[in-house]
Image (cartoon, rainbow, N blue to C red; front, side, top):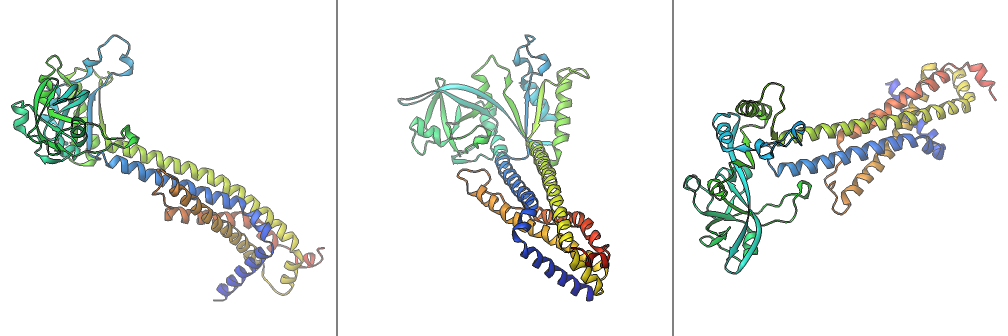
Length: 415
């Protein structure tokens, strides 16, 4: 109880000393203020950017797997045709049949055709061949009509799905199911309208474009000379199966392509979750780097604190001698100066937190800012305050010990 009372009195004494020298205290804590404001601003900016990027990633689905052929850098420029590395249907069928970690698949086959409806003609519009599972993997549902079925694929039917933008550009009826359009001069029946999803500009998207989908078998029959698909899209049975799926597909493709040990893969298996994990690692590294910079700021601030505390001990030598002559123990003197250093650091941390909060608020208010969801994490506040306290203790210890060891008679004689 006595210790608590002494501590409270010491804190009030420290505050009164700081208040008596406000400008000097403010300048002394400038390093702490800058350090804390920097860590709060950096952490909140990184956190806001992380939220933005993860939100954009989620629009793609974290369980998606992209498998496609790829020419290794070591083989480029050697006259090897790029199409030799592309996925062929035999490989697609093998992957679909033997892979256990991926639930759903759809190859994608892109073609560019002229579309026509009545007097409207659209030049070079991308038409995509898909399997019926595409709807589930992409979460693209039909708002009118029906989705593709296995019958469409097996019987190679001349049916298609269009989105709202295609309806607008072709001037189709707002309920176009049952209408017919020409794709590359061939008549296709519109069986459904697929919902339009706008891709984020971050991934090269932007304004919605006209989309037309046809069964994969039909798409490939329109190009009889081609045997490969553009890529194979899959959906993991579970997000934690990413590495297993990569190993499974990689083993199968290497064996089918007769790649010897040590030979580079001429295909890629990419899982969106891995991009998210990589981004999280980068974000953590940025935060750690910011922590290092802040540590330097706090070190500089701590040196300033120690300097001003030594000046304070020198200025108050007679006061220390008087207190010791009145019976004050060295431990009480030590605590007095130590608490004063810590309070000084905490005051700087408080101002730094306010500045950091202001920076965060400004970031969220910037027009079009990707940091609109930036917030100051609670752990960053605790970390900043904790570092400030440690700085106060470390850099205030030496002046406090010096004050505690002063000889009372010599201190009273000090001019």
